[in-house]
Image (cartoon, rainbow, N blue to C red; front, side, top):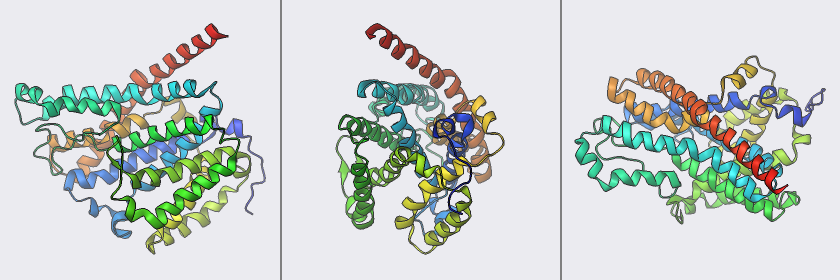
Length: 365
């Protein structure tokens, strides 16, 4: 009952057309945009349906954000183990994250900002705060606003509030390299111990961590630990993939209602880190139509995520604070920008990465 009858080859499963990772990321990007619509269109994030059901503890987009981090831990562990060394691994991670980030920051500051600021262009570009937005490229001490931009929106001035998770993700990339150098992937028990430590810290010291910031990042410690639970879960699921891929996806009919009941009863901090990784991997193994089509179209999800807030704020500035228009318009615009980001920036960066790194391999081989 708990184990599947047919064996899944782990390497075949990891081919994009043989899993639902793209679909999970796409659903995640859409739900994050859905959740943000309440803040952006109505300035009332608490009105989000799942936030109301869970007394503000979870919004619809939050579990999918955790799935993002789980998948990152899963796939980035694979990336490290297939890299020649830590430097090679970090080069790949930098070329995956930063090209699209740089383009987004420059376009938001130089194009979207002047379009929607209440200041004159001269005043806008004379502000130090305008040029401070470039700091977001470093993912350090993030700046979420631009002078006079979206001043009349229900959620005024905010042009980019999603980069905190990108910053934390890159921190976990750096820690992955450290773990690899320390050979922790060969000492799996140490990563199990790390997961237990993170889980226990969140459960027992979560309130204390709210008042603690991470140096340089200017972000609270609690989100770093919270997303780290899922990232390290992804690491462990990859290292033990032979065992986890034997699980029967029929378990989803048990996992989903049990998790929902636990959330409604205020136990989400304890149960979500246990259920989300299992749900994500089991869902990824389901045979669903359209998986290959998604893989062929490209991966707009990173672009959708970093463009979601600017796109929705622009829609509200153009058409007013109508929830449906803000959601549908923001979703379509961010999807279009995500596709452009993938085909014009991210995919080219991945090719560049392959040619540069392969060239270095040949020159040193």
